[in-house]
Image (cartoon, rainbow, N blue to C red; front, side, top):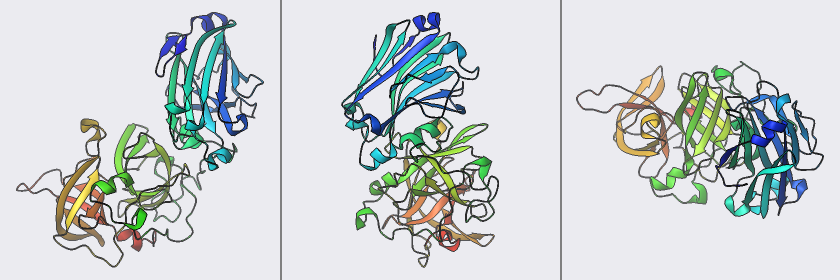
Length: 417
């Protein structure tokens, strides 16, 4: 059976024999530039105890799974899998060294994952580089339990490579071609350079930044983009996984290094955080750099080493916003009701306030839950003057009241320069 992307079928022969052979063939990229891995996942699609098996015979193992002895294959004894294992994901990734030379999924000429049971082929998923783009990791095939064992041809790509893919399944890479995700730097201690915010919910904390982060004083290309359309690529959805479920907010890139700003309350109690730039479907894993609970600000860093080709320019530390400034806001309001769609709204600075000596902008740009962390910018030049933090749930006399912390606080905190 030749499988199409997204197709599923039941493994009748494999269940009878209890054994499954998986072989992956790739042309167009040298075998030395690729890693084929098997990830053992639980019913929640989270990595089970770091069980990642390298087809080339690496040190990671999972009971019931062995590498085939060749560079791209596994032999699986379904009955011997640990009881918690509910799903096996067969993934392909470009090594970090090859990735640095520009190797990507579209470099593949042809590829195929073949599954055999009792000596016979039960399914083959064929793919081509033209099926993908700049992705550097692919989830090719998943074998999972549902009234017995089943197979799905996934064909899902990850721009962030192996770190992004493994993070999607709640795991971490260590000592594998140098592709490790940053390790927590102190458990429950405050984030590096933070102001006593702590690590929300055990979310990994990034490496300390040596001094203030230098952010560009101009847009990419040094030309002011059209507002608001030219600002959109730098804004993204912030997806937060908590023990009680997922939540969303808004964030925006502030430079080419992959650093972005959102609200502290957006990432509170987070077990993981990802950033999805507008116009893409790639969730980029992130770690905390700084948290400011008093000002409700947070600085995070995407860890896939891709940086950002787009960013927003922060208003200078010596340029105070003025009453009546014409503003714009980009955010993802009411994601649960409206869907994940970026929304633009306009307004003005209605009042300049202070809350516990922190400068706050009262604005009448339309917003709702999910917009938190969104950039509030001058419509005249697109420069960010505030970060949306909250609003009044009731309107007084028809007036829309929302609040944004003055973006100059990022300078005051010493986070940026």
